[in-house]
Amino acid sequence: MIVRTLEDIRASDRNVKSKGWESARLLLRDDGMGFSFHVTTMYAGEELRMHYQNHLEAVLVLEGNGTIEDLGTGVTHRLAPGVMYALNAHDRHIVRPETDILCACVFNPPVTGREVHDENGAYPAEGDMAQAAR
Image 1: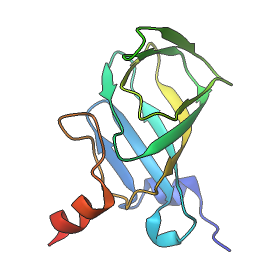
Image 2 (image 1 turned 90 degrees about the vertical axis):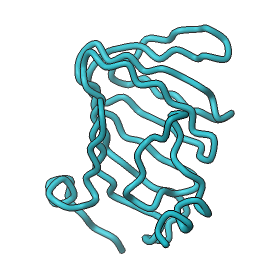
Image 3 (image 1 turned 180 degrees about the vertical axis):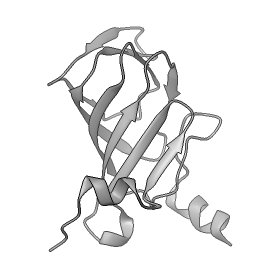
Image 4 (image 1 turned 45 degrees about the vertical axis):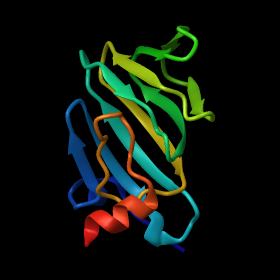
């Protein structure tokens, strides 16, 4: 059994900060669950362009408001507490938080913990992470 507190994770190296967001990574690849689980804050006023080419992601908005634009279709959806979106087709997208957005996120395959978005808005593939660590 794995038991962790958000407070402890936020005070550890499992709390990753980058431009426009901060992610407390409660479960990672080394935990052996087959997915990773994060509590992420996306900051108001940012424009977060992402394209997870190597991962699938599901997100549940817990607090805050904004929009997510599907760059493949041009459709924009409202984000608010209780809204879930799943990037089931490696969807290119832009999140535009109007207020800070607190959300719970699941990634498959799981991330290792230190990933930040590359120039394409993606996290590296698992093999690329191993190469970078050498």
